[in-house]
Image (cartoon, rainbow, N blue to C red; front, side, top):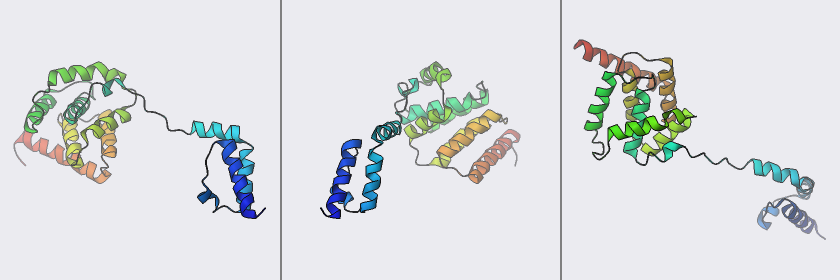
Length: 204
């Protein structure tokens, strides 16, 4: 028996015992010593099968909001609600900004903001992982202009000129999902704060 035949038989034995298939093409690249190593691993195949089973990717858990949000417009509205209510209350300034923004951005006219707010409030307390929730919203929106979407969220939060720690954390999470750099994040927040101040004072 040649060394090549010996290598092939050892790899066949490994595949048979571990249920991990190694094609002949791959087997040709193994040396005799490497084949011996695979034979050694095969002797511990029950443990190996257990490990490979544990390493299978975890299936994402379906959350209630997956059944409530089906379009980019809905996801944008729910993201806006989440930003607005992060501090526990919806300020008049934030509500006015949302209303004017939804109209100016040509949001689906068949979308009822009142119904969407009810949907949001129905699952809000069930959000276990905010990062997963935000990832779902951003993925559904699928923005081409990521800076603009971040600025939209930042303007909602900065509208009352008072950013809480939880709101700052929220903005950082959104920035991370949108691949916004720290410098860009800070610049956008400073710009919005100054623009709000100019609007309030009606002067630069």
